[in-house]
Length: 78
Image (cartoon, rainbow, N blue to C red; front, side, top):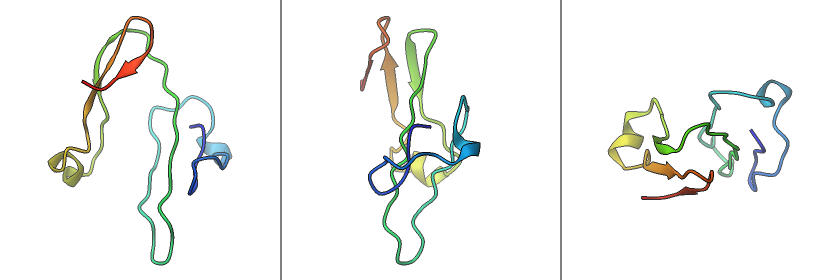
C-alpha cells in the first residue's frame, strides 16, 4: 500500500506497509469523507487480471473490471 486518506497521500499504518496480498478499503462512516486507497502492484507475468472483492454488489455494478498487464509492465483497460 502506498497511501490512504482523502487524497491518498497519508502514509499507511505500520501493519499495512510492505508486501501484502490484500488491503482493506472501508466505506466512509457518518460525517466522514470518502477515502482513497492507493496501491502499487508488481506482476511477474503479462496477462489479463481482475480486481477481486467479496462484496457482490461491486460485481453487479461492474466495479470489478478486468485489466491487461502487457509484457513491458504497463497496464491498460480493455
